[in-house]
Length: 147
Image 1: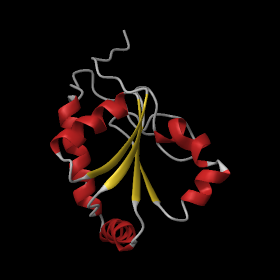
Image 2 (image 1 turned 180 degrees about the vertical axis):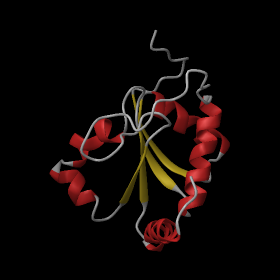
Image 3 (image 1 turned 90 degrees about the horizontal axis):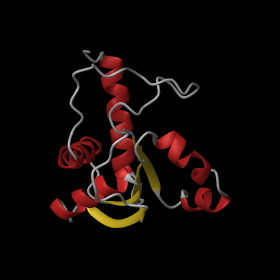
């Protein structure tokens, strides 16, 4: 879908809002079958975390096929085609590099769970300059499957 000038301006404002802040960045990465809302909403509501967010900027990354269509429902945004080949861990790590470039994030601390921890660990191996620190919860280092 082609971006309208208004959408482009809004995207540029969001990008500059991230990069203009001198605060350190925490990026979250969810586990399989979840998204950032389901994985981290309760955590982000804790008083201690709210206090921490006065010092840090938090960016939640939703992996492909895991996002919701809007903030009020838990309906998947779109179904993936039957022949869709889900990206490898390495390809997902490269997507994070692209996200950081788009948002002009030079480095971040990762908070990651399960498969998200595996993906961001792979990223840290190929781009240690980008990952300033890792908080890994239940990292999965073998292949994952729902079946």
